[in-house]
Length: 274
Image 1 (spheres, rainbow, N blue to C red):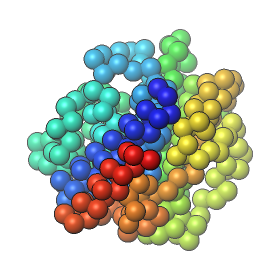
Image 2 (cartoon, rainbow, N blue to C red; image 1 turned 90 degrees about the horizontal axis):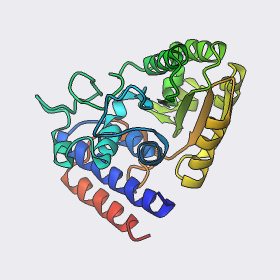
Image 3 (cartoon, one colour; image 1 turned 60 degrees about the vertical axis):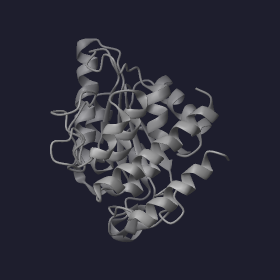
């Protein structure tokens, strides 16, 4: 896909995210919006996947380690054709396949049930090792929040991944600088993120997570890196695309009311014409 089409699709994903959370009257819009460009690139450009054959054993795997940002995952899966978009408004409702955190029990196309922060990257490392041991060529991708880096298990998994030379694993960090309690630098700073991953044996790439040329180049570099896993540190804006949500910690886990929903959708409609 060309950048223009990717941007249009990512904007549709953002509209879906806002619609989901508004319909549920709960959820996590801020971090879902910050990773929408990355999720769009993964599902429409990078990963070897097929919505019509979601359990194909040779498919690439994706683990949303920051599982509370399920609205972004559901939105991109619906846009990619895994299930009808109309289902998005059932987010967090009783009986819905779209639970507040991803569950492989309910929704085909998911590779891991997530929600407990820090655990997703360990699972992704296990999947990458399984591919190596079984002679498979699929790649594994996992997305972490920057506040999630405060979990010790992340670094156990990082040490393991480098020790096993998992060059089929790409760890992506959504570095929007905010977590539920405020700025990550003030709560329990994980900085310098790039130097930490490098010290644990990763090849590290730092990019603007809202620029598709940089995203594309980073994943190409990750595929070409041999002998060690890659960490892509994405500088992003929490609440990206919605004027009153951008860079506001309060929108980590707050749903917009009807008036705010209308403003958000107007912002995103206008983005379609930029």
